[in-house]
Length: 477
Image (cartoon, rainbow, N blue to C red):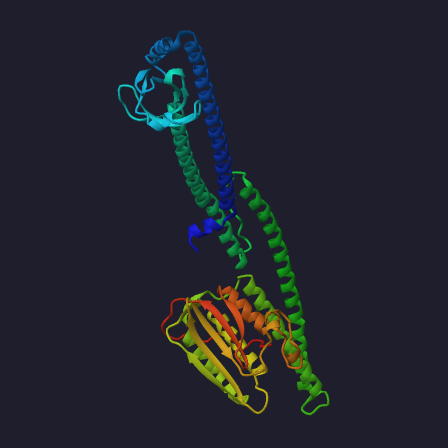
């Protein structure tokens, strides 16, 4: 996911977008309200001014007649201002005024009707807009009184400029929000996420970064760090208890086994207790293997494996395991097939990867026998899928139901079909722990028929040349 895509999905960006939208709508509503009310007020002022002018001129016409009206309009027309005047005779000749360029339709309307017209100032000039009233006077004379709308146009221009400025402000706020969210918020969230990933990989000593600003991220980080310290202490105590239990029980079991062997040697061959002693020794060996597996899983999950990670060739590793286990599979009446692509590198712990593959093969030997008379078939494969290397072991047995696959990798889980077979239920748990240590995963799939257990690990650089096999046979349960 790109940084821009992550930005769009963040809660901070969505909140900022909501705030900007709300601010824009509120400001737009205020501007529209002010413009409408101001325009209405200006219109009312124009009407009132025109009506007042008409009232005064009507009184002048009654007292001074047409001569007095013409003299008054001529005097007013010479004064600067927004008022418009025009007096014409019955033939349309201009007697006085400061307006020209009006069409005949202006004078054809009803007397006293308010009209919006275009006119030119007397003496020439650009066309303008105005509200006017035209009255028919006795004797065929006509009187026009109006008001120029330059104030209205100025107000509209002012609103347009304010709207453009506000759009610029909104764009600037959006840019500042993007910079703040992407550079500060996302950076801190990514740092917390990276720390969380390292913690999930087993490094419980990691802590979330605190920059000392005291903001909500700092408060969250401080609280989570306190929780992580508590979890680390609990996990350390649990690990110590588990290790102590395993070591304390493993030692007396080993001594018990040694004493049983000594008893068998002292009793001689064919003694009545030989069979019971042999079974007891086998049980001790099983318990010792169980404790060994538990200790190894604990060390792997804690990220404290003894061997270092090296570059190795996945095909060579699988070929060595196949060479070791092909006779074992043949002795069980089956066949082991290898399908390994060459040149696929892994960066990992060779001993643990060998142990994981061996555990998968032993699972196939125990539970992968087909129903009926078909022979056992085990396929060990290595392939590349994208940026991963896939190490898989397939059998042709009854497989594992989809509902049980998650449980199958848990410690000491024995499915119903395998309870009568030897094992402790730790084999797949160990494989799963090895996969997580290498940044991969264990996948159980239906092979139709059978089960395909696959280790999907990150692709690394292949190391030329073979290395010695350090792996051992672990518990395959």
